[in-house]
Length: 140
Image (cartoon, rainbow, N blue to C red; front, side, top):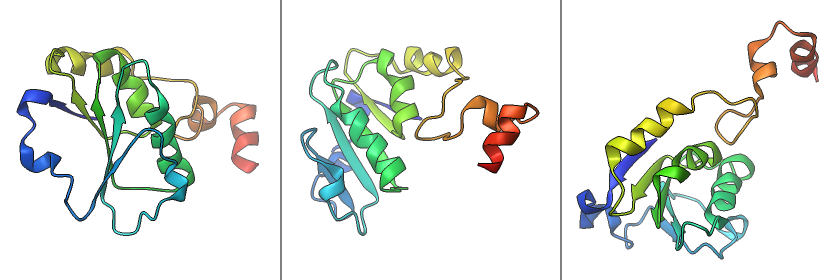
C-alpha cells in the first residue's frame, strides 16, 4: 500500500475535476455507478470511527471487479491501514498528525492472515495446499 503524508499531497493529485477520477461520499452505493473509464476512486473517512468506506472498497474490488486505484482520504489513522489494505485500498492519505515511517511499520507487524480478503481471496488453508481441506477446497 502506498502511503502519502497529507502535507506532501500536491494540489494536482487532489484535482477532483480529473476525467478519470471519481470522488465518492461514504453514503453512495458504488453498485449504482458507471465505472467506465474511471482509473481512481477516492473514498472518504470523515471520522476514523466511520467505516462505511471499507464496505465501499470491498464492493468495488470483489463484486464490481474494479482494478484501478482506490484511495483513502480524510481522517486516516495508522491503526486503520492494515484493514484498509485488506478491504481493497491501494493508497492512503494520512491525517496531518500521522507519521509515514510509523505507518509503514504496521505492515511489517501484520503480514499473515488466516482469512481471505479483497486482495487475497482464498483463506490460508486453501492457498498452502497439502491438507485434505485445501485439496477439497481446490476442487469445489
